[in-house]
Length: 91
Image 1 (spheres, one colour):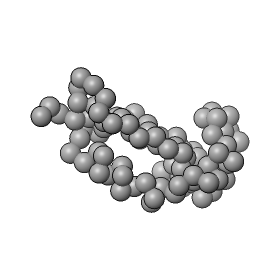
Image 2 (cartoon, rainbow, N blue to C red):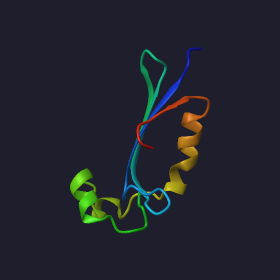
Image 3 (cartoon, rainbow, N blue to C red):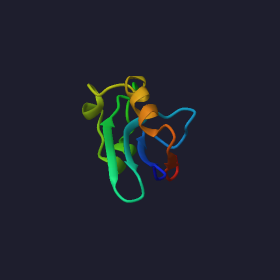
Image 4 (cartoon, rainbow, N blue to C red):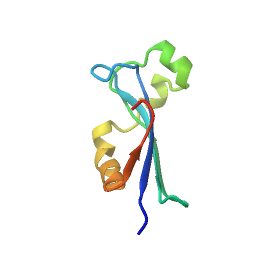
């Protein structure tokens, strides 16, 4: 089997990992030739999204109010990316 790549993109409530929370995550599993699986979801950060972040991302408090919390999707993300090369920018 060829090498798998987990291409990950996230949006957050800000740029400080110690304080800010994830509001959206997208994962694409790729084998170098084609996309094998995709997963994307908004996430409820359990904290208000600052206005400047909403302006930047388009993600509003209303959009994430009923979204799952990170712990509810974490297992899916781990299972999907296990053994794959993690590809991301500024994560």
